[in-house]
Structure formats: C-alpha cells, structure tokens
Length: 64
Image (spheres, rainbow, N blue to C red):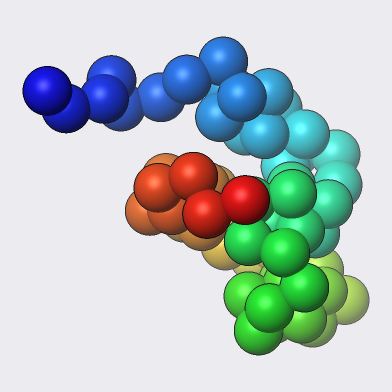
C-alpha cells in the first residue's frame, strides 16, 4: 500500500517553512547539501528559500 501524500509532520513542516525555511529542510534532510543551499537562498531572498523548502518537503520520502 502506498502512503498518503502528506502526513501531519509534513503539514507542520510546510507551515514552519514559511517562518524558518532552513529549519524545515534541516528537519527533513539533515545537514546535507539541501540545507546549505536553502540557507544561501534565504540570504538571497526569503521567497526562494520558502519555495525550495516546500520542494524538499514534497519530494522527500521521510529521510529523517
């Protein structure tokens, strides 16, 4: 059986990504390259950081 598209944890991470995108990426993927890319995007502009965080949350399948 396949999992539903989003769990309660993912919903929490989507809302957290609005305020602190890099924290939600860290909680999903750990201290990997995606985390550092997200910090760089947040420094360049908040909206790109949010979009990247939402992308990581939607495409990751429970790595952490």
